[in-house]
Structure formats: structure tokens, C-alpha cells
Length: 297
Ligand SMILES: [Zn+2]
Ligand SMILES: [Zn+2]
Image (cartoon, rainbow, N blue to C red; front, side, top):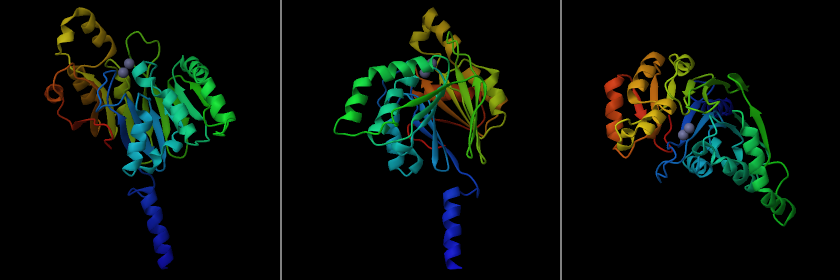
């Protein structure tokens, strides 16, 4: 009887309080192209039970995952990182891709990486493989005796719609508007206990509203339009076409009505964070937070 109780307790703890599934979002990088030492490049982990699903891999992704594991999130053990959904191919979102391919392999990951993303991801991957060809040869055929599989990448160039499903999640890609990029995606993750939507980089789009529609958590990008740089016409045009202002975000969030809105990829334009927060508060009365690296939502 006692044994049965402990078995039940272990099962309960492993499955989370809902009794079936436990979903968390871990912010691995809340930043953007700016080299902010406190904000790694854009990368998010959706953790469902013992599995981590990455969205984007900005610079710093593997080390931030290691930090999250240290703080108790076992699914972010670097050897377990082997699936990523790329929103678009801007360098701030993909500079950590070689890191994700090679670092866990050097640490003995055996599974190849499954990478989902837009047109051009195959090309990018081929070039990365070529660039580190010598490294692979030396590690595999030299004294390190590295395995022959863990550095490989299976690339899935996707279209909007359901792009992935397993026992934990269904992942749906939706198109977003990111200036002159021919393809950029946001992602919706549906697990047994939560619905999570990640905007990626985007100008305001109803696709986010549709994908969220009362979701538990919406991660959305935002920029501060009051910065000095925005006085120049070409930067104003750029931000308008590529990103979302607080006023636009307010409109999106009111219609998407997430239970919690988390701002990430915040472009502060050298103004204090509070300045951006105040502008969002003026536009949106719902619950929101600003993301921090290693924040858990
Ligand atoms: Zn970006
Ligand atoms: Zn971008």
C-alpha cells in the first residue's frame, strides 16, 4: 500500500499538478540584435513534461539552457536539446543555430537536431555544416571518438498549419508580417494543460489574434517608438514594417485576450524599460510582464 502511494506520488510530481501534463515557458534569451549582456539573443523553450521545444536560437542559447537546467529544469539539459522551431532567418534569431548543432554533440548528444522553419533554412544548414566540416572530421575520427549522428540536422521547411505533433504538443505555424522577409512565422503550442503563442518578430497582424484567442500565454515583441533613432524617416519606416509599437500591441492584445502577456524582443531604443512599460500600460489594461532571461512563465 505504502509502495503504491509513493509510486502515485512520483507519477503525480512528474506529471505536474494538473495530473496529466505540465507546460512551462522558459525565456532563454529575451533580447534582440543589441549586445546586451543581460539579454541573450531571442530564444524560448516551451517545456512540456520532460521535453524542451526551442523557438529560435539567438546567441547564448545553449549556455542559457544549461543555466536553466542548473536552476532545476531537467528538460533543458543540453544533451536533450534536439528540436527547434525557427521563426525567421534574421541573424539575431539564428546565430545560436551552429551552437545548438555542435555544442550538445560535443557533449555526447546522439540524436540529430530536428529543425523547423522557413524557406532558406536548408541552405543555411548546409552552409553551417560546410563551415564546421573540419571540426566534425577531427572530433569524429580523432581521439575524441565523437558519435556519427549528433551533429546532423534534419531540416523541415514548413508552411503555415500544423507542423509538428507528439504526445506532448501540437505545434502550429502561422504567417507573420516582418517587413521584406518573404517568410516569417509565429508559433502556437497546444499541450494538454496550456495554449501558448509566440509572435516572433512581426508588425501587428491578426494572425496573432487568431492563434491566441484567449490563450494562456502570449509572448509578443514590441519596440519603443519614442527613441531618438525614430526621428529619422528610414528608421520610422523600418519599425513600422518590421515591428510592433505599444499602441499596436495594445490593440492586438485586447483582441487576443491572453491570460498573460509577456513582452520579449523589446527594443528599448536607449530609453529606460519603464518608459516602454508605461506606454504599454496606457494601451492595455490586461495582465502583462516584461521578459527576463531565465524567467519561467
Ligand atoms: Zn529579431
Ligand atoms: Zn527579425
